[in-house]
Amino acid sequence: RDETNDSLISIAVDYYRHTDDARRKFLSYYYKGRVYFNAKDYQNATLCYMEAEQLADEVGDDYLVGLLYAELGRIYDIYYDYPKSLEAYQKAAECYERIGKVGHRNYMWYYQSVVCRNMNKYDDGERLLQMVLLSAQQEGDSELEKFCLGSLVMLLVEQNRMSEAKDLYEKE
Image (cartoon, rainbow, N blue to C red; front, side, top):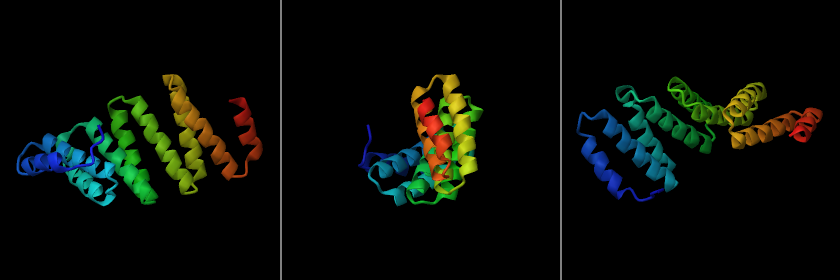
């Protein structure tokens, strides 16, 4: 359920802020950030996520830390801060890679490719899309495969590589 009211989670943050329970403190800040994000209050969401980030090493849970960096990547992307978005998505991908969450990692690579395209880093974007496409095919993720092919076509069009874009479009 996507909450937009922070009244309940604020109680948890206030409580865990004064404890040594790093995991619950991390989660309370993370979920408060999610509530703010759902309410489109990106500034407060970022502040909560940054509080959670300070606890990432103590928590030692790559899945949770990966979720956090994925959310930070989304916010930085919304604000067109592409270098920070790219860095956050890279950190999320590294977390997911360490714990074998290939599907999660693939989506972080895909989001990195989108950011690279927005930064006109076409070679990096294309390399990432090729990596995602191969992995998505191996994992049987047809939805992500479609996203990648569409993004590859658009990337080629943006570079005026029309014949390659046409060939790829017609192939799929």
